[in-house]
Amino acid sequence: GAVVSQHPSRVICKSGTSVKIECRSLDFQATTMFWYRQFPKQSLMLMATSNEGSKATYEQGVEKDKFLINHASLTLSTLTVTSAHPEDSSFYICSARPTAGELYEQYFGPGTRLTVT
Amino acid sequence: QKEVEQNSGPLSVPEGAIASLNCTYSDRGSQSFFWYRQYSGKSPELIMFIYSNGDKEDGRFTAQLNKASQYVSLLIRDSQPSDSATYLCAVFTGTASKLTFGTGTRLQVTL
Image (cartoon, chains in turn brown, orange):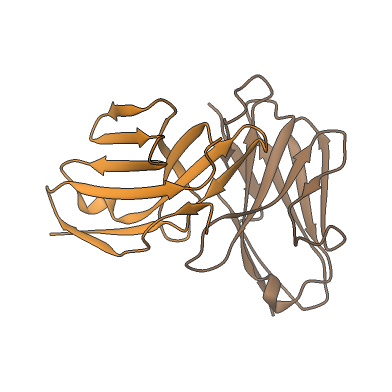
């Protein structure tokens, strides 16, 4: 149980285009999902907290107009990187907190490798 | 001061030995502490978590927590080459309701 999927697993896009990444909780409902970014040899940095039916909460320094988050259902959150640039190339990982779970409970997706050329 | 600090390593231990990974944190309000293993190119997978002072054992893994010293560690007994990975320490603070990760310690188990 507690499986989280991400799609796509890898994506290459041209500079200036937008890319959408999906995060799905497959066997549980998740009112809250989290989006992380990880640059090579660095740790996971929380970008934003996504809550179903409401606006996402972004961490300091993360541009909300560039990283659009939509959490339209209890099993799906999407992250859209708008006008992507090479410096946005990174490993994007989502996690989902079960609605019926503890506050500290999170299950991670397999990640999406974004390369912007 | 970083919120969660780990030695980046690499920590090299021979197969069969005990690997000791350490982590310190700055927020005394932190409530729960997690150890994740991350293989290169993959997302983190939870090994174990601890929230009370003392030791918690799960198979070959033992987590140790000392809240007074703001210190948490992970011991891996009988280390195997498959344990070679980066180990991330994460701290959960209830007021922020989020996990804060350390930069990770790379462990190499040599034959």
